[in-house]
Length: 163
Image 1: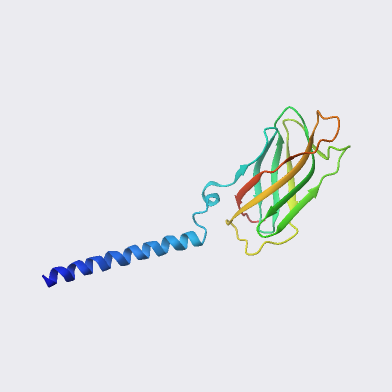
Image 2: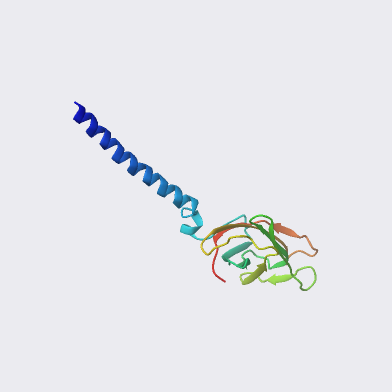
């Protein structure tokens, strides 16, 4: 009877140690960000109105941010201001100059490359780490006769790339 008890205890110890080791490995993978969604799926973009399209965002380790912006509706869009927040208190912004109140004009159906740099370096960025950026874009439509200053606030989550 004692041999059976000893055998059962050895069985439980062997499998118990294996389960603890698996839990520790999974915990370490989570801690180092292996299971972050953007590492597996790439960039995700939300909060863009129907008259615009944002694609191919890139954020590098020097906190330079760029993306393609397309005027997808019936109006051309004049971008006046673009700002971003990310990480702990880091900011970036750009003011666009152009004809009248329209700033930089993105013609209907065309795509423009927009760039922005940060005013504060974010600590400990590495290639492949995930970053969420909140944009604030002020724009006007070509059909408006006066400045209306529409705004959009897209959120972009993406992996950091090398410069």
